[in-house]
Each structure stands twice: as C-alpha cells, then as structure tokens.
Image (cartoon, rainbow, N blue to C red; front, side, top):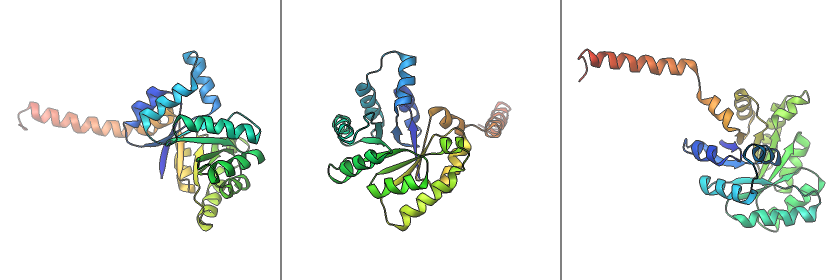
Length: 226
C-alpha cells in the first residue's frame, strides 16, 4: 500500500515528501496546464526534473501524441530525462496498448496506463504489461457507477493471474475516496496536496493535544513538575 502525490508543484512535493508517506508522483496535462496558468510559462523538463530531484521516487509523465509511433518517440524523450525514476503515462487506447507492449517488453521502460474507467480496460492494460494501471475513481462515479467493483475486480484479476501490475487509483475528490480505494484493493492511491492535508486533520485530535499540553503546563507552573 502506497500513496503518490498528484501535482507538478515542486514546493508541495518538497514539503509533503518530508512527512515520509509519499512513494511517488503523478502528473498529467491538465495539472501542468493549470499550474502554468498560475505561475506563468512552465518548462516541462525543468519542472519534472525538479520533482525527480526532490522526491527520488517514481514520477509519471503523460504522453500527448496519439499515434503509436509518435507516442513511443515521445516516451523515449521523457524517459531519457531520468531513466531511473521517470515512468511514462500512456492514455488507454488500442494504440496505447501497443505502446505499453513495446515500452515494457522491448525497451524496459516502465509505463502507467491511464484514464481507465472499467474492469475490461484495466485487464487489457495489465495483460499488455503496464507497470501501473490507473483507475479514475472520481470520473467513474461521475458516470453514475461505483468505482469499488472496478478496483476490486482488477485487484483480484491481477493477483489470480500472477501479473505484476499495480493499481493506482486517481481522480480522488474526497478523503473518503482514499479509504474506499484501499479497502477495494488499490495498491496505490494518488492524491492532490489539498487532499493529503485534509487527511491530517481531525478537530478531536487537536482538542486532545491541546488538553494534554495545557494540563502539563499548568501543573509545571504550579511547581508540581520540575
């Protein structure tokens, strides 16, 4: 069981990696575009390499090309930035499966099959050899379906067939989505910094810590504790 952080904000990666709970980072074109609109022009290579340097763990970078040959060339370019940590996010499609097969089995490049919305898609990605199979829980729920069976059926399929793919659950909207994903059998859940911070908080925890500390300081002020 692992947590990934879903961001291209280097400051967030640096801060939250210090918690010791993050085992990787995922990015996608939407996150990159949104971050660029906030901070001005964004150099993708420099940003990705800054995240790699800060994390020293797997970082997924998504392909934008749509034809298999072009996707493989784009994947090689991203992978050349750092062969140890950069994984290639391959959007799910027929061409995507071809790319996963080539990258994983012929070029030894780890892939992350992304934008998966069903068990059928997930099993194909796993059979093609994807290192990671990314199931988009929030978007599945947007369609009116419960993502839990997709996650659990995929986990069972991978386990029963002895496949090596790991399930990443993304498109997480609420902290309960994290709990539900792990309960359903996800190996990894990738979440935004905002969700990670929400997972920290509980008013009762804060009240209890304050109660303990106030009582201690009061007793020390009265000379009861040296």
